[in-house]
Amino acid sequence: MADESETAALLREIRDNQREALSLQREHIAMYQRQLERIERINDRAETLQGRAGKALRMILLVALPLVFLLLALMFLPYLSRLLA
View 1 (tube, helix red, strand yellow):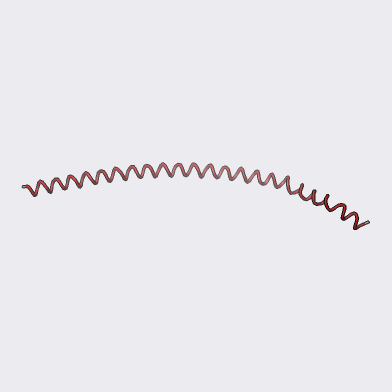
View 2 (cartoon, helix red, strand yellow):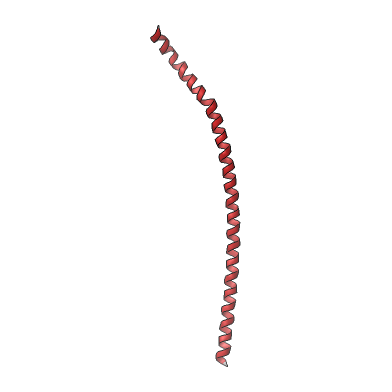
């Protein structure tokens, strides 16, 4: 009879430990889901920022490159006029 009560107590302890382990797993899964959602939001924001930065860079290049070529042409203009004269 004592063995049966010890066995029953051990089985109850195992059951309680399994319930606690399952509860911890649920908490970890919930935390993991929250982290995944946060990561998705961060990635969406990063993609938006990269898109805006790309558009700004294209606009800067459209303005800056012609100005650089104009400045180079103006710098070499005196040398070319002296060579041709």
